[in-house]
Amino acid sequence: MPFAESTGGGASGPPAPARRSMAPLLTVCTGYFMVILDVTIINVAVPVVGRELRASLTGIQWITDGYTLVFAGFLMTGGALGDRLGNRRVFRAGVTVFTAASAACAAAPDAAFLVAARLLEGLGAALIVPGSLALLQEAYPLPAARSRAFGLWGSMAGIAASAGPLLGGLLVSTAGWRWVFLINLPVGAACLVLTSRYVAPSPRRPGRALDWPAQCAVVAAVALLTGALNEAGRRGWSDPLVLTGLGLVVPAVGAFVWRERLARSPVLPPRLLRSRAMTGGAAVGLLFNFGFYGMVFTASLDFQHQRGFGALRTGLALFPAVAMTMFASVLSGRLARRTGDRPLVVTGMLLGALGLAGWAAAGTDPAYPLLVAPMMAVGFGTSFALTGSTATVMSAAPPAYAGAASALFNTTRQIGSASGVALGGSLLATSAGYGAGVRTSMAVGALAYLIAAVLAWVCVPGKGRVGGR
Image (cartoon, rainbow, N blue to C red; front, side, top):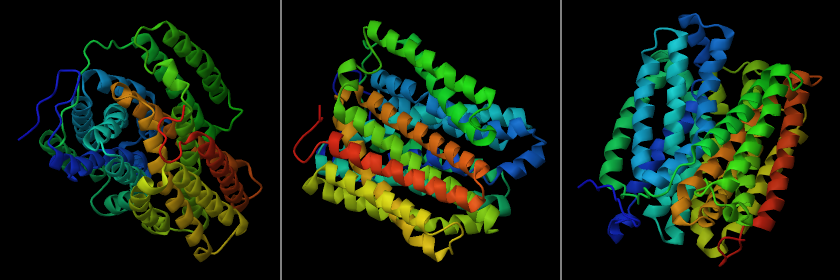
């Protein structure tokens, strides 16, 4: 029987057996997988879309970047709405918007319509992701079960991001580019049904006001930053548009901080932002997304432009990194209750650093077999660390701010992804040779992983400690 939405201050959760079942986990991860898949699946379809819809270069860029900008910009708003209206309610609304927008994308008669539908998809994604972590925290209150749930949730990102080019290439070459979006319709419909049936109702806090000026400021700051980073990869860091975007980020952040100090109901209370676990865990997430997505981006370009791989072969070439994510997430979830989060995050970051350093040390034109072990190390290390860093951030926040904490963590990760892709693109464009650019990009990513390892040692609580404040 479907759960009814709770209107009180506490959740009338499901009975103990339902909390231990896999159904809520699989339901939430289905929605999250769909969101992350759409970040990368479109990349191989864009050339075909541009030709069929006669899109300009600007239109093609907005088909890919518009989704990312809205997604990253509205994550904090999605988290705040979930805390106020109930995370399950907002999650379901996000899946509905995302599925409807996917249908609109598939039916797009021209590029302008497709761009508008992609923006709406990004809004749906921003409502889905913060609630996904908050719902898992509610569904699995025991630390061991929660660690396993966070582990599988985290592995979905790496699998979806890396599988996107492979699945996109397969669909475009067989059924056509519109199926890149149509595939979301049955997945979204199933997610809605399963959410109503198996995911417990979330508490609603109608007395918690939404500070719209602060929300607008954070949307502007994140959208400007991710937009400038996206353009930096194509135009270069000295381009006036890039410099203007980066310059406007500062007053937007200043306006947000100023407003938060005055607000009676801030997006995140200052005491949470002063939490070493909260801010440190978010910074670790930014750094490992920087390294992982920078690797996937530069490796994809290297495989296709330098080695002559097609889209399908490129997806298969990246498979070693993907294959390790599921194994690492399951293992880290099992180990967390014995070791605590700190050893897992530190070990994962060191493995990621070793993998990217190994790629950089392999030379400017290494044979593909030499890259398999480095990619496996990066995929394993990133997924291994994601479980602990996710648990660290979510444990540092009280239940009333679970959505906002999830939004903060995922916003910093999106900024890390955009930064890694932007820097990778710039290095490929400005280095003496393509191979040298890839090598430098991997070395920079290895440094990011090392910094994350140090931060994790300082900020992630050890076994038996919560919050790390």
